[in-house]
Image (cartoon, helix red, strand yellow):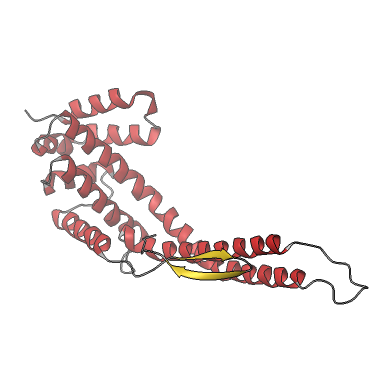
Length: 241
């Protein structure tokens, strides 16, 4: 027997209890008040667990739409800071080289570090440099991973990206089947009628998300391993960032 939207929401509230935040509560209220969403929900033909998972996917959809601009702004901010961070690492590496040379004559005051301590400083800088490189890869990939494109304005891109995640969540709850029109009705209800969601838009969002996830990464992380006072860059198995 199909689960009604009201029953799904009541069950979800009971399971989450006091952990339900205001944002999630607002989403549930919008869903419950939307006639099309109420009518569409039983067509998913899922059990109680699947129904709760769909409700959870709706809440995640709303959150991603809201957080999307912040996430893109954070990546742009890192890309703006990237060169400054790289210069800082270079300056620090030069500084370590400077103090490692010791005094030029008997008049110089200097800091006496052991060779192991200096090697530790260099190792730390290599790892910082590696972290900057990896973070740079994340900053470049995040818009693509979320489904953002230059052709769309931020809000439209946010909805499109979030639709891909919603489609995945609903399809999983329905054991591989996605009722497009019902999913579109839920999406419009979650957005409070601020955007028109067509079945084609959900299909496109789902295709975009799958295509992004299928793209292979060509980056190889290089780990610097300390050996005495020198460092050797060794290739490790490919990993995604």
